[in-house]
Each structure stands twice: as C-alpha cells, then as structure tokens.
Length: 493
Image (tube, rainbow, N blue to C red):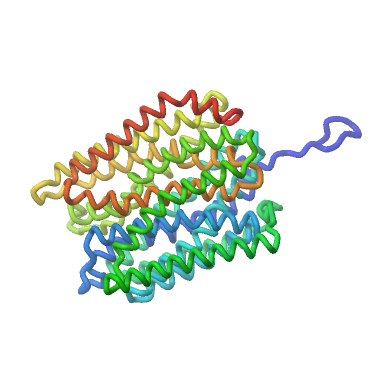
C-alpha cells in the first residue's frame, strides 16, 4: 500500500493472530505449556510434602511445607533479575527463553525421581529456568507492539489468557495423576508439559522476526567477567551460610533457609531500586518513582494471592467437603477454579479496555480496584474459616467465591502491571525492568514465609480478616493518591 505515486510504502500493522502480531501466537503457545508445567507442580507440591510417608509423601508439617513453598515461589520470581541481565547483556531474550525452558523441563523430570534430595534439586532447576524464561518471554510480547500501539494492553491480556488455559488444565491432569496414582507421576506430567512448551517455541520461532534476537545492550568482556565474578561470590556466600547453618544447628534445617530469604526478599528490591535511580537519566526518574508505588502495591497483592497454593490448598484438603457423587475429588482440582474464571473473564476485560481506549481508568485506579478486591476475598475467607470451626467441613462454594473475587482483582493488576512495566522501563532495560516486576512476587512470598506462620496461632477468622483489612486500606490509599501517581507517569496512562 502506498499513499501516493513514488512515496515510500506504509507498513501495515501485523494482525495475523486475531488482530494481533503473529509472533503472539508463538509466545501464547509457549507460555501456555510452560504454565501447565508450573501450575501442575504447584498444585501438588504442598500436598505431597504434607502427605504421610505411608502414602508416598514426606510427612512434613503444614507450616514447614508452606515455608518451603514460599521460598520456592520467591526464587521463581527473584531469579528473573539475573535472567533479565543475561538477556539484555549476553544472550538476548530469545535464546534466554529457550535455555530457560530446557532447564525447567529438567527440573520437573528430577522431581519425578523419588527422594528428598531430588525435591530440592528439582525445585532449584525449575526456579533457575523460570528466571531465564519468565521476564524475557513477557518482554518479547511488549516488543511485538509499538510504544503507542493501543493494542498493547489487550495483547498482554490475551497473553495472560494463555497462562490461565495452561493453569486450568494442569491441576486436573497433574493433580489426578499425583493424588490418585502416584505423586511422582504427577511431577513427570509437568515435565511433559514443559517439553511441549519448548517444542512450540521452536516451531513458531520464525514468526518472531527480529524480536529478541540480539542482546539490546551487549556487555563488554570486562563487564561479563565482573558480573560473573559477583555471581560466583554470591553463590559462595550462600553456600557458606548453609554450611554454617548445618555446623551450628547440627543439621540442615529448612526454617533457617526460609528466614534467610525473608530478609533477602526485602533487601533486594530496596537495593535494586537504589541502583536503578542512580543509573537512569533524570528524565526517567519520575516514572521510576511512580513505579515504586506500583511495586509496593503488587507486593501486598501477591502476598495474599499466592497463599492459594499453600494455606488455601491445605484448607481445601483438610476443611472442605469435596464429595461429588460419592467420590472425593482431589483437593488440587480446586486450583483450577481461578484460571477457569480467568479464561472466562479475560476476553471480557480485554474487550473492555480496547473499547474504552483513552477513556479507560488509569493504571493507578486499576491497581486500587485490585487491592480492594483481593482484600474482600480474604474477608470472605475469614468467614469460611469461621464456618469450618469445631471440625466441620465447609462447602466448596466458599473457595469458589474467594477465587472469583480474586480473579476479578487479578485482571485489574497482573496483565496491567506487565503492560505498565514495559511502558515505564528506561530504554535498553526492558528485560531487567520486567525482572523487577516479578521481584514483587518474590518479595511477597519471602514475606509469606513468615506471615503464614501466624495462621495457626491466630486462627482462620482473625488471620484472613486482618490481611483482608490491610489490603482494603491499601486500595483506598491508592484511590486517594491516584492523581499524584498519574502525574509522575507523564505520557503513560
């Protein structure tokens, strides 16, 4: 198409995938199967750790299992920081995503091997691989669109739909295999899902064009040596702390690892923001200041939301009536409720944002809605805890209601947060900024390593009610300061 004879051709926007770039189809399929593997394993991890040894589990207490779960999820979302650096400075996002997928698959297959050591090794491999894949596949989604392309938010919501299609089927498949046949068969099924993700990524490689092919800001040999040296020092320091812990306490104790990551999870974002503020040009600092608000709010949100895989999962197993036509269905199946609602509601939200266009609420207002919603979900959870007193079991509809409210809140924060992260990122720092977004979830879960300990002494009603009230108050505060935050973001809504 040309505008006139002799003029340069006008590029048509790529709309090969339901109005979006065809490369989105590749990333959609890859993320779907990667999330199948992640949520399949996540749905059964705490249940496996707490199951009696006679039933193939490890026989851990609820608190210890929830603590390990929190540390694992924290690592999954902490390692995107170095993963983003490797993509930006060494590998490029596309290769980083590929290597991450291979390592994740190896981790799941390691978990399929019985033994406590393979649990730790498998979880570590999955976390390392996710650190390489997660920020970079999301950054590539953002790079499929121009900065002013109004399809961007809708595109991220479509991408978010892929996450939840995989997350919906994963507990049904992996949960059934694990709880009805053998725990390690369930972990193996998650590995098969990750293998399919790698194959889908390679099959659609060409549709990505030049997106993510090269490192946007290649590191010099000296910078690489410096970074890897610091990485080695950090790894050696962590190993030394673990050896010291074993020596002093007379044996390895996971509680000490949980405490260590609780401190690290708070210190890391503080240090990282300090480095970012010193390293970016002055013109980008107001946007970074606004991003601090989004980050802190996301921490509180994910601190509540991510308890669905630990305390709410155990509530489903121990305090929920799961009888269906005389058969007690697996507790892990309730982990499919939230992604089912996402699949149903995400297209509606994508359509809503696209039709509203410039009239849609600002990102700050969407975050405020999310905080109030997640707080209300835990108020409902507190009521469910009261109903489950004296050894009674409550109907599954309590948890279904909680997950519905959380889904509405999630759609106001998570895809929107991904999008605003790419918009506020300083030039040449897209992958690292995306890593910072995922660090909010890491920080939330390191805090969870301590917060979830309060469930037993406080009881369900007080515990869930207090956390719900904190989130609601945070949402109200965000509404009140939305105008000031909007002013800091400048041309970014």
